Image (tube, rainbow, N blue to C red; front, side, top):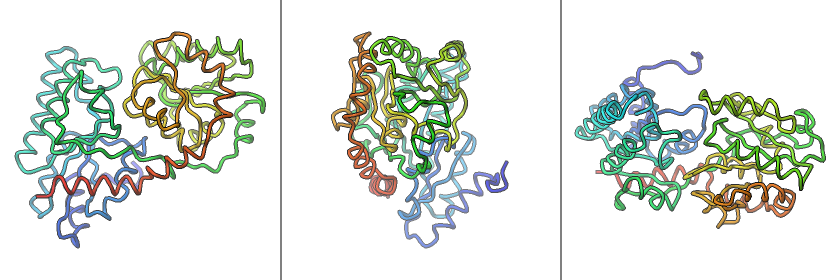
Length: 381
């Protein structure tokens, strides 16, 4: 572990957090779990924590959650902020094991709640991608929604999309948008230079997907559509980049990408510089997902001023209504290929100023302040 990020016991982190707020009349320690280091979302959302009288403490393991008791003993209000729940049931081999894991998890949360810890949950997705036990996951989320003091939604239509799986009580909901990725990645690269360096020609029309390389991302669908669309627009070149999944479907995707000479593939974890360079090289970001409640990839594309093509589902429908995304009908098997055939027109009609305005309005400083102000109003004694 880097000397710049020392491994400090969670209870010690909580103690330091309380001490860092000694000048606050009503200090609040917010422990968050699980911790995502590869995605800057949490650091963006928590950017203004200290300005609002909060100290955000990462709680990596479930066993670190009880360390929040330290905050209570030191006179601060403890809050547990729950993010993704995929790991709770991930290793369960049967429905019985999944329910046992669910009950253990909820038992920890109920124990903390009974000791005065406030519970907050951010709904990142309707269900985890590739969820092995969707029925049990829905039960877990229904319990979580009813148990939490605050349910944070980032898509205003979240409750419409979750309704068929689990209810979210109206009186628990706090709507604060996903922070934009402005300033989170380097943006000093020049498009023509980057494209030359990675092998694209100036005349190429580069369309692609950035993110994990897994079947649920619609990559196979994208490759099929790209092959068809080239008959109309021969300048099309594909780009697919991201860390590959370990399942059979992901391995097959990698093998297909290796055979396709018209697609540049980068099957590895993308550091910030590589991700920025690839986004700079793109003409059009394509996100052919089966479902999307909150798409960080779409917001990243907007931060780089790139037009987005996606199916009319979830968040993409909302972005389309704001003029920030071109959508196609996912029920039409030829719609994606037809849209890719019109990529040149989509790029020409794109207004990067509209994307910049959206990103400025959802800048992390604005969103973070709104998040903590709203949270304090709802959880303060």
